[in-house]
Length: 228
Image (cartoon, one colour):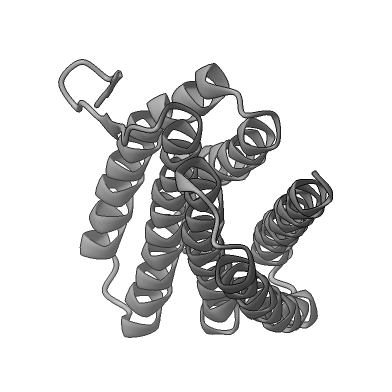
């Protein structure tokens, strides 16, 4: 019983570490979007600093996970919990890279008045951050329904991306200044980073579904629901 209680405590600590890492990533994305909105290169630098913290958190959690597997030799369901942790932190680190990618474009676009400003871009940022927040809440509570709702929003972000992509490409076709084209391309990169961030948040949500139910789920693009 004492061994089991210690193992449960270690699993809970892992979960809390994952949630903390996820909150860092969420804050990093919000910071990157704020830096973009204000063309704030100093704030963008803080995004890079936070990325180092996120990478460290990933490796610390990995080490704890490996140690738990080696020392405790968990049974199937418990092993699934540890493996889920190791998959989730990989996606979280990648999301941090997407946020960093947004910060990277800021020095290249400046405050050019000719920049394309598709409204879908802001909505994508809001949705991506909220999807991560809800995916983490689903993980904390083991809430399959909430995880399914997160995964179901991925198509919405894809549609926003398609609309933003079309508008930015039209803008690029209409300008004849090389610098303006380059700046517009960087805005397109922001849209792509956000679309990928939402994909990764969906991965986390689907991992929660697997953790709770024992079956992998993926989006059915025709019906928009989750299938095993």
